[in-house]
Length: 208
Image 1 (cartoon, rainbow, N blue to C red):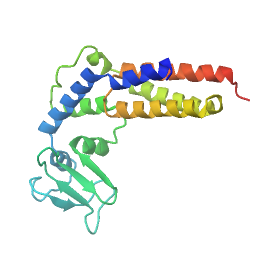
Image 2: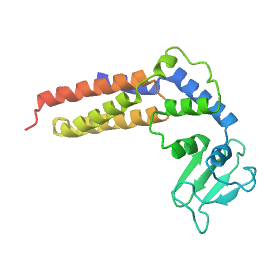
Image 3: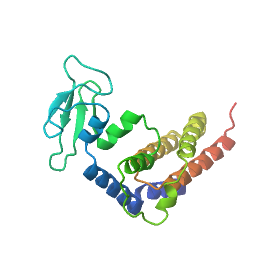
Image 4: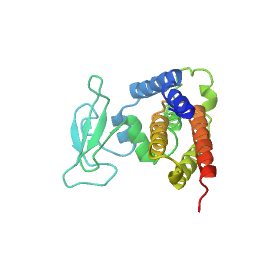
């Protein structure tokens, strides 16, 4: 394993304080806001007020002659949500909020928007996390796009193992960013290191 791969793996796997903070925010939102709350606020009628399971028309793919979605209230550790048999997707309160608003920012920005809407004060952030919450989501998305495009273009300069390893790192990094499981500054640093590595390969094997 190269130094870059080892450093990237450690950065991806060692963001415990930030991850705990994000999970605390998710838990606080789920405690305050149910899937039924979000559905009702967006015009979906629940006959039992969210207290009982029931069939509903999916709010995202349109009205059904036979309602294709099922609402489930909170039960034990399972949060309230809906499952659509046509979309083959499940949404809890946070997922519904994101879907109704067509939200495309980071997971942290999504939580921020809900916290503001429902008047919630997020749990105290670990050091540096407050500054990270002011990140530019567009910059991160651009870094991912540039990295993936240049990696595809430089594929022939890599060994197959090296190319697949870097693809795997980017895939895991994207997943962790989406789930709020890694500091955004750390994610950006990994992407910049990946670009440096790709650049070195491009110089070894120029296009054309």
